[in-house]
Image 1 (cartoon, rainbow, N blue to C red):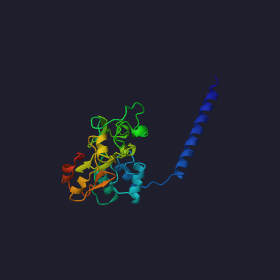
Image 2 (cartoon, rainbow, N blue to C red):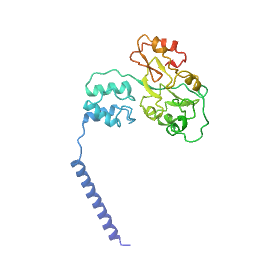
Image 3 (cartoon, rainbow, N blue to C red):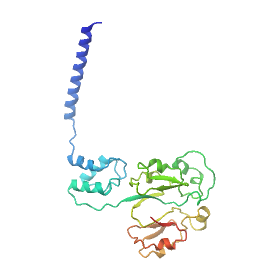
Image 4 (cartoon, one colour):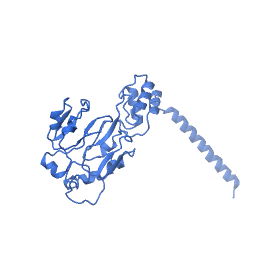
Length: 265
């Protein structure tokens, strides 16, 4: 074994590594992109979930948008009021009210309430099953498929399927919107956490046809809208919708609803 050759080889490799390191260091400084310290400061106020619930690609993108004035300090639904306060202080802006939201599943069709048109065995993806005949095994083509794609999408474990219907844990939900994007029937929406009354149905059918499919579906009668003193309820595509900004929580809609699908949160 030639010891001298080994030593020379070792020294050469070390020198090559040193030269490459120096070159990378110089290149890093030469090509470095200036970073706005304010963006870094705002980014540190965000939770770092990168969920996209704010409408931006992630926390870095949101921080940049806030500093540029393209987004408000209270845009992050996950960080909530605490993050909004910290960001406002970092930006030297007045603290705005943060309206906490929560995911809500617009369906009452649990297995004991809805009818089934066939027994389904196969894929467990709600999207795939929604492409099957009838948009799923349940008679209501607009109802919750109960396969739990929203459960898998939720990064906060705030949704579970109970008796064939998705249910949201309001306290665990951070309104990131992942479940909203995942549901192929558009059954999940974000509503204010303190919303008093919500419509737990999304059927587009009317009257007897609804009754033939589900025991607890909206029949599109419009009684709720007629009895709402503030005009907060409208009927579109045979389903009642509550404008939470107009609702004064009087409860008359829930009291008059013959289907009992307007519920108090």
